[in-house]
Image (tube, rainbow, N blue to C red; front, side, top):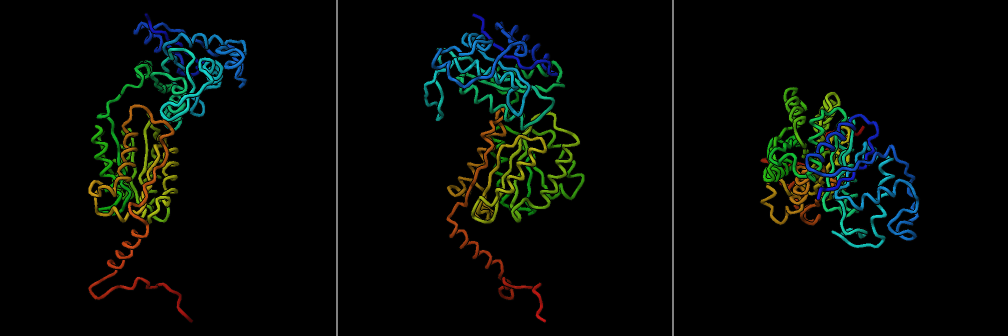
Length: 423
């Protein structure tokens, strides 16, 4: 029996919509699926009243008698639900949102269950449809695409869909490119680009030439990404801030990458000056030549104080940079007690390095994931000092005293060479 596809089409006359429709029809014909396309701009659907009549007064049927009832009836018979929509605020267009609000709720029961740690409703019908959301944008916008993917994933979970996928087409795309987007979505998120083809750029923000904590974290991230099949390229931000040729090489690599990962120490509660200079130049570069596809960005910031919360402002700066530069923000990692990691690899730290390793591994998974990560994954991860603060500070004091020692005796740590002279 042919698979039944129900399409809720909210494209209207949006530019690029016809290309998606053609691609969808061709895909259905090629797979032998029956296709029912409902043009929402030709239907009259009132807003949901929130009365829950479809659960209490007329179970399974919306209390309002309009075209939304036809959607519910078709949905109950469909094998695949496909929604087509211009992306509005990262979500659905109003016409589609009204259709979903009214058409989907009657296919669920009011009773609750726990699935995968979350509360869900039970399905009214024995079989639930797979779910595909295809959005349309004028051009690449990583923030909107990331939120759209998250909304689609949540809708699929509430629908109890056995499979789900989301994809985004851009209005200027060729028909061939649109067909690839549609085909990828209808393969339900199967890897359209193998992990081995993913290219990740690592940005080193420490001004130290060797043995910096940031470089140690970047080294572990590189190994983790390599193990997942990604290609990794590293750049020094101090060099890029000072040398035009080095910056141009970095910018070109970023343009060609699927993701960018910054590793930096915390200086005076923010990113170091040279790191901010390099990112400012990179932002200007990307404003002049906008990205042509979605790219991902994360950051690992470390500070010498034991409390990882000190990194919050710098991570917020990274998030704002990502937003303005057209990246999808994957959330960052704030590491406290950076002196503990100095001169040692994360692997060599064993149990003491477990939290920092776990944080880096979690973000690495988002860089190589087939789908755009859900917006819920973009939380910052805190990796506090591996040892109690009092012990860390004790060793830190000892380290400073050792560093103050010299051939001619210890130097005065309380020296005041610029003190105001008494008159």
